[in-house]
Length: 209
Length: 83
Image (tube, rainbow over all chains, first blue to last red; front, side, top):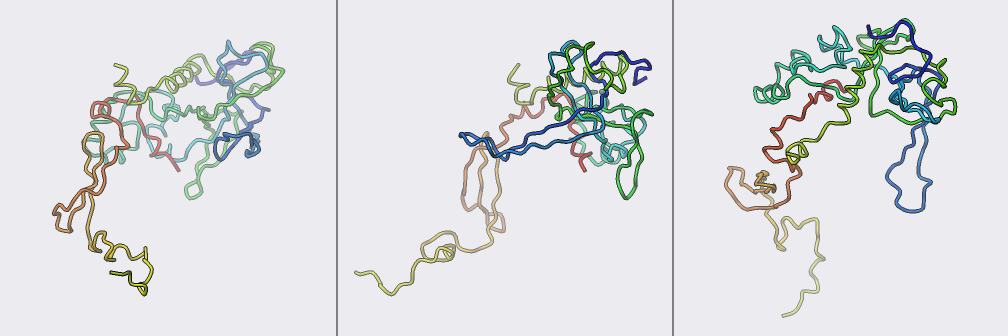
């Protein structure tokens, strides 16, 4: 099971919540002088958000969130993903990471290079949320429209929000909570999130030996 | 000897064929030859005969062979799912 049947009255890592806001500052380039006027601030109001602060660190009026966004239509082109989109959340074999026709189009060298990686994560920034009757369905694509209730978060979109009501995991606006992940699903998110941050670039992998 | 006062001003757009000298306007081809941490641009005739070296620059890919063959620990497939 992906979602907990009886959610707790606390905020926890990976919970889906509602009623918050995304504020994204944007600049064309870093400002290295006193002129700090060249920026814009984009405010958006997604339907759903995911709590990205680890359970024990929620509090003191600060919370990290990520907007719950639509999945990518091309995920459905991969039979392994189409069968269960939450497969994206877990480690997989190299040949499962792309549609079979793409895998067979790779050169022998390219296949060997990818096989060398072994069974591990792909799409390292993404974590899929299963559909649920409490989550609105939406339509993907125009030529071959697909109705789905699956969503995802992109770890690159995690941001910080100040909210005075968030004092600790129990003294918090738990009424904003819609769904809670089961312990096993939350562990999957924790594992993939940790993997996302602990990756080392190739040049560091060899130099670190 | 005196300067010809009637000569036209130097036309910088014609430098490839002007007598100031640079390469004649023929169909030369260049290839980039990786050598250690350098990329060497070699000039060849259309039939592949060596003419000279046009440029030597530091390669942008600083990964050694050992670094390149080291597994990165995840499958980089994001490009296949980009819209």
